[in-house]
Image 1 (cartoon, rainbow, N blue to C red):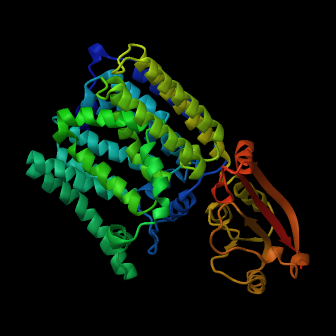
Image 2 (image 1 turned 90 degrees about the horizontal axis):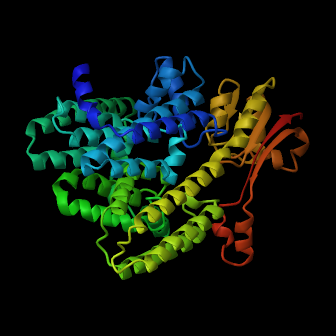
Image 3 (image 1 turned 60 degrees about the vertical axis):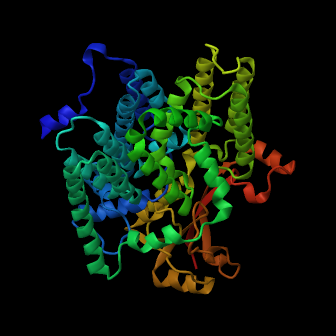
Length: 539
């Protein structure tokens, strides 16, 4: 088995080894190690996964859970030895490095060109969505790794036990995030075209048997069908929220991380498909299904992670290949894309520019410089200096966008984390009402969370019934039940504010744009005043 695995991944020509990629990878790992504790807290569902991982370490897997098992299992491995947050960040680092290696190898398989492969990896690391999410302790990094591994195993020639490895990799992706199920139709389409019937049966057997067992367990213990089965009809035929279409379009068009990126992604995709359509077919099926799923569910940035490596490849391919469009066509498309970028950044605040007006302005300037170079170029944009200058500005924009979004999101959940750690040092029971999962993780042995909507009188009775000594309230993420009794005039004398934690992310440029009438209150998520407060019950 180990000999076969070594054969699969030993594809370097050691006599003609390009050292740019290993050096780049070493620099990336060094930077990531330095930034291991850069974020003040984690986001998303991470703390819920930690709680599930803690249960797994005690030999339990909760019956009523919609969480997939593989990521909590990975977290459970390190929990007995390391802090849960630190271990989650280490996992993200390891899988992110694996993603870069697999992206490089797949780009080599597609293009047979190390320059394109190297540029692909460089552009991926600078992609705002990948740069932010890979730095976080999230399930995205392991999921994208198994997506890339599945496609690498599919496209790599002479893979021993191909069906076994393909089925296992796709299964692990599906057991990490629900989008992993999309790999099966994508891979099967390719195997059917190649008439690899034995691999088809092997992949289906390895994938379906564990899935059926897991689904059966859920059905028997809960009496309800698995979450995927419940949501599938809604995803396929349910209504779409058309007010989110512009945001969806923004993420798709600018997924490559540069305002004009879609232009070169299109040219790279066109160049690849014109030569190797059958080769790209499984990948195209996966991309189409993923985009459809995001369209039907929600255009959240986390759903786009699996697309980032492939968009980066087609962007690199388009940048380094001969351009197939005339100058006038490229200029018109470039102006349209830049206009959409400026308008969408101000109006819809997509993830990659949210709160970072400076980065949006800088990127706009870089784009204008590229368009200016186009104007100076000949009819078919073939001046020798155009490509390197364009690549330079694309990379520069990637650095600005990715750095600014990482810096801006550094203090997400900062106040609720600090408040939780602070009240943990106090004697007595604690009540909280936030949905971040932070309080539940840190205070799980010390108190109780409010899980139902109660009026202020009922909340006071609930606090006294549960012998609560301290109350933690926050505005970081609190869309459910909220402990409002602490602000009620009737009960104010019964609470003493012990400490307030706050973090202001004021964007003066955004406020100026609001005063000018360019932005309205509805589209001002760039201004955050996060706070968390700890109260002592004295009445």
